[in-house]
Image (tube, rainbow, N blue to C red; front, side, top):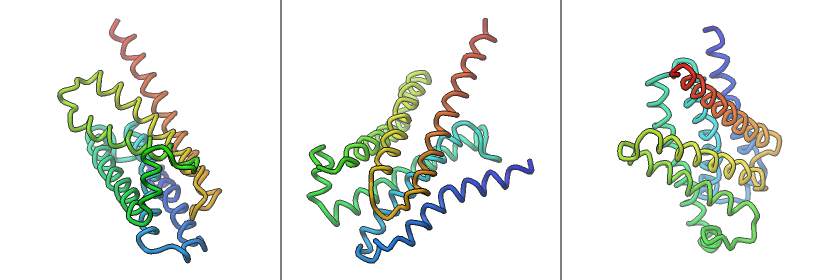
Length: 200
């Protein structure tokens, strides 16, 4: 129980430190307010991608079981909003660049990974709305598969972007996103194996 506040403090630091480092970037002096908003929405989205597997695995104190699943849905909705703000802001400030990115014709190497992650996030939101029609097994397979795409695409996108995010704190956040995702997927697979063994 005593580790609960430490876990929450560590999570807050993992998300807030990269945001604070980006806020101190000298590059912001040459950016407009809307572009800055779009950029920080992207950073926040990456932080929310870290929270999601922690909720799914029940690793956050006080948010296990029903509370964890409910929080997972709310954070998923917040992630969609953050991505929409990120993309919309960049679209308004530079429509040609966004068109190239969406058509996968952008010369920047980070663009396709961000676009793929974006569509995967939207796909998960759509599947969540249709969850009752899909069946539990189909939902789990689709959700886990898309989660892998979201994490991989988001991490590669973030690491390739040379912008306001400070390199070390960005790398730390990306490493934590990967570690949390791998951990929860391994634990859930183990739980399914134990459940099958117990059912024999």
